[in-house]
Image (tube, rainbow over all chains, first blue to last red; front, side, top):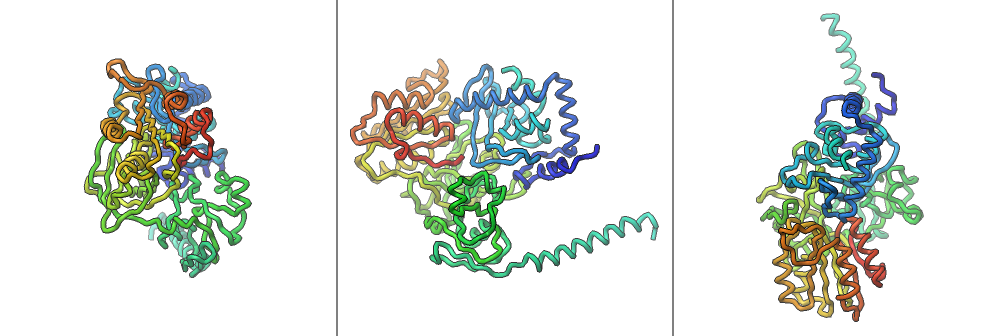
Length: 158
Length: 372
């Protein structure tokens, strides 16, 4: 696949230490374009579309905000929205996003037994943008990786 | 030599040569030599090696400007006034600059390179900020996601006011390649100058909180920088209306224990509203009840937003803002005036400000440290 210069730059900025210390690729050895292509295929297989999922994540974030920093029940899930100081630019250089972290987990599962990315969905405003506009769910092992299966379970059913 | 090797070896040779040329040019072209930084009209004069960011250059000289992102320009905490013309504001600075900031030559210290002599202005209190070497004396689980970390300071003492915060230096760990700093309010008493106590909630995906919860052990050495912050008790007779949730307990634990121990601010009545979701999220209930029982001017109001029937909760129920609203309308004596003290997420702080304003508090009497 031939990459456009803007994509090459964006993929450079996804590396650890450029925008964030951890970067956006986790320990995934696949190049970003392959991560995107495979997640697009997985979305199609699961019958998901990026816009609907991004809207679902926004609803979860808004629900979490009502908890004022504490977890809050939303159907069978617990949602918690936390904020950090500052903003992060999108690696594609098309926007700045408030630093925050929204976590979603099953209400009947103890926090201590939840594994981030497996049974706890963790995302930020930047994650929503990357998903909606760039179809980028981040690399495996990234703390903000959005697994399509988990998205289907948590961002669609509410 | 095999002709197959000629190509790769030639490319490698040219690459090495070019890298050498770049390194040599960099050494000469980016060598700014010794430069001077004049702070606050010459009250402090530094001679520094030029070429690096102002934030790191000041840090190397023992002047610690707050920063929470490691100098990536993504937290906006390291604002300072640069009097010398260092060119227009960079695109990386603009998201954090108000029109007034731009007019006043406020810059992000992490984005400005020291390439010539500079005159800058910094708050005087930054001069007394120090880096402390500490050892983890104890780690206690307060809830499933909040830990109490007690650090004992090696060979130094810390002077601070109840309500201030330190920056915890998180070293590289696991797959984290570099050190970062994060701000946490101190829950220890100013009277105990040999310790720093912090309450840290695990934030999913959080670099520092993950380190504290999953890697930090008793006996480990840890660096902290501080004290920072303007959040402190105001010396007036007005009643304190304190509101917190989760690890927002920290500055209030410090303030309350300080006031109780020293008898400071004897005219102040203190109301403390603390919110959690269930009893599993609640902590220090016994300590606060004991304090309340022995100290008539202190009123503790814990509230749960989603108590379960089996918890048999006897306290207040509802979001902490709703409970605050009810008490401000009915229980709190306003004779000496009211002051708001808040610690929590921006959403919680904004919601509490609205409730307080609706109940007659003015915004200039509502105090908080904005961590986010």
